[in-house]
Image 1 (cartoon, helix red, strand yellow):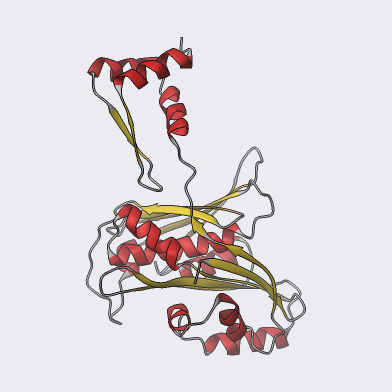
Image 2 (cartoon, rainbow, N blue to C red; image 1 turned 90 degrees about the vertical axis):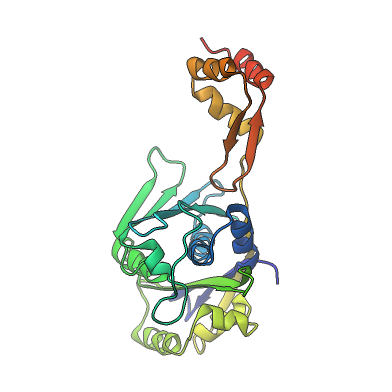
Length: 294
């Protein structure tokens, strides 16, 4: 199954919902950053959330950033997403190893620790919108549920999951976000709460073969779920050697001269996809000449 997300409404538009399957995205991130299982689970959850929240944006050029800063050994996560299903991200410390938690699961909360969740929406205005809340559990889904309620005043239920194979590749990954509109009636709310109480986990549904549409069918059973859109999801980074050249130019005349005088090639690494870009001394001289730096 290729990675994709669906958008839906239910109960006469009293509820809006999103669901995704992101196995390929999370496996691509695992390979790019050589993440440990617990970091893969944490980053995968945030990548899934980023893909769905990115699709909530209205402008084609809008960008969403999710940042977690924690005092756990992973130190933090950063994910960015566009409105068309492109998502990328990384963990500050990718190789954290922890014992399983009390439930025998990967200890994502232990890797994250206590800290903050920031949601940054860049909609092309002078200043981006920034919302920030304290982490409630470090499990990420619960933290986003709290964020939506406290920072955006939108009652929501967020489910996220990553299931690993024994060889530490990704077996399943995905999630859902279900949100109540301000005019939602008690009957719709009660039915949704009953349905959610019967959901075991995202990974259980995905591993049973459920598609995003079928996940929402379970969550919104009896509420006339209507899928309104589908969108492919991909781990996508827009870095390039030309973009890195612009970064080097922005360092200024002295920095580039120092690199040239050192007489050895320079390597620049993209944090998001871990691609390495190398510049020879001759390339640095060319950048210096073409940049017209004073």
